[in-house]
Image (cartoon, rainbow, N blue to C red):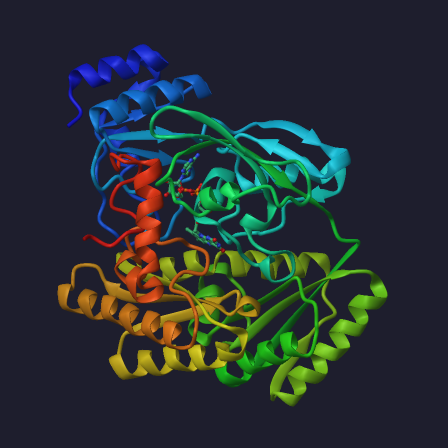
Length: 460
Ligand SMILES: Cc1cc2nc3c(=O)[nH]c(=O)nc-3n(C[C@H](O)[C@H](O)[C@H](O)COP(=O)(O)OP(=O)(O)OC[C@H]3O[C@@H](n4cnc5c(N)ncnc54)[C@H](O)[C@@H]3O)c2cc1C
């Protein structure tokens, strides 16, 4: 366990002013945006250099002290909660662009830079990093890399992993590694970049990221399509993908989510299942795509289709979608939100949506459903009063059902939020014996198990 001598050692490494054991600082790093119980770390450290991180890791490794890297703290599965105490390595001050390699469409960043800030700075070069998580104003690149985050634009542009070219990583024993290449493709050995992406701080500390960028689109158009039933909306999504449309976003909101959005965002959308669709391209291609989408929507009993939108209206809609979770939260003050993030093959998306709808009716647990429908990614939020133990347990059990059904459909338990604490118990159901291979990799890189312990793997 960490003692006073360890705190003194950390102060020697990073300077006294960059170490804190103050209650308020510990509390601020004890919880993320999930429904999981807070857990206090023993100490917060704000490192200044990669060499300092290396020394911190060496010391922690020798002493067997847990280390949890922390960036925006916006995870939804308890990913950065320091369940075993120890050191929080706060990375959010590492928030600079190191180098823009404009000619190669690449950027080198420190891991604490926030997604929106990065794209704001890239705008003048007409470049961007596209995954667009709903939490884009707080999610950092380090957090996104470690959760392999994605979001609204993943359907066209892919997920974080598709953009990471190089990483600098400090291993638990203090070694500083550089993995990856600036070349667009490589077949040179095992793909270590991909190994660290999505590792949720369990393998090492990421201290620098090189990202591939793309050009901003020439034009953007958005569509709002309203349906009587969630099935019709979900089936439209399937046909949209099946028949070759190329949207840059396809978001679904069930009627509960639209209601919460109206209430909290001051909108007056029809409170029935709704699709927000966006296209990137040139004038002619956008018109063709929208006409085709309209046909598909009408064939699926769409009751309202709006495509002639000003840029302001479009922005309002996307802001409302991004704030959907917050709107749900504000609509139920003091309630726990039990989050789900399953992702299924696109042909099974309607089935998944119907299942969640029926589950909510069958169990009497209010479940909101929305998400990045074009990827087959359904976010669910089961809402239960925090102080009602019995209801909380029932709410948690709906996750068993949702996850079980997604796996039965050939899907995954976590589309983009990572495993953290929340989904660890389902890892064996998804991966079977290959979970042991993952454990062996963890053991190889982190033999003492100091990096973000208690995450990803179910208790043995
Ligand atoms: C309203 C809302 C909407 C959201 N929408 C989306 C969405 O659309 N898509 C999506 O993917 N997610 C979404 N999320 C979840 C979350 O915002 C993302 O997973 C985000 O990328 C986490 O980034 P962060 O900087 O907050 O990371 P943190 O929560 O601080 O950390 C995430 C994980 O990475 C580890 N870590 C952080 N920095 C480092 C580092 N430098 N080195 C090693 N490990 C590190 C942590 O230990 C932790 O395990 C949403 C969350 C909220 C609250």
